[in-house]
Amino acid sequence: MKQEILRFENVTCKKDGAVYLDNFSFYMTAGEIVGLLSVNDRGIKELIELMAKNHPIDAGRVYMGGKLVNSYLNQEETSNRIYQIDQKSSLINDLSITDNLFKKQVINEWVLREQAARVLKQLSMDLDLNKRVERLTTMERIMVEIAKAYLMGSKLLVVLYPEKLIGQADFPQFHQLLRKMQSMGISTLYFCYV
Image (tube, rainbow, N blue to C red):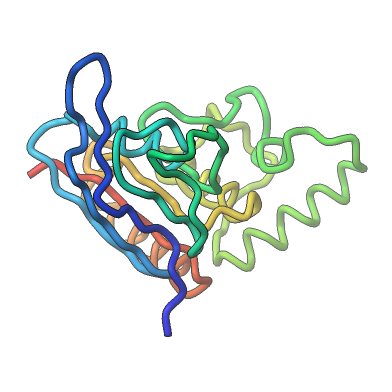
């Protein structure tokens, strides 16, 4: 039996009088790779916000890992283990890959480098750990963000419009990374335009 990662049951979300999700239902299991096609951006930001943080909803329920985390009856705004990759990077340009992965914790630099090398090896990534983020290609940045999501214990990786992020030549490597995450039980949800 597959482990549930995310479930939306009949979720309705309104903001400032506009309906962004109307009786929306969705289900994902561990290691699943799902693409959602959209004709426009309407409701996508709100959907991702509801996945990451349990903002108030007008109807329905949201489950993470089989546990109820949000409902129209319970309005606690807690966070979920979701990592988002989009055009705006969460990495710090002036830091190395190692420092970005571990946010410059007060630990021996050699220990951090060893841990970063181990993580990249587990994920089958070959990157120069000393390289500054500002000098990374877009595909390398995505690789670091995926490694960061893995280190944070994220169970769901959300990728916004990969066709805008990477070129056609990088898609085989991108899909290989997603399949690697899939083999580790980490799900991926990506949004694309029709």
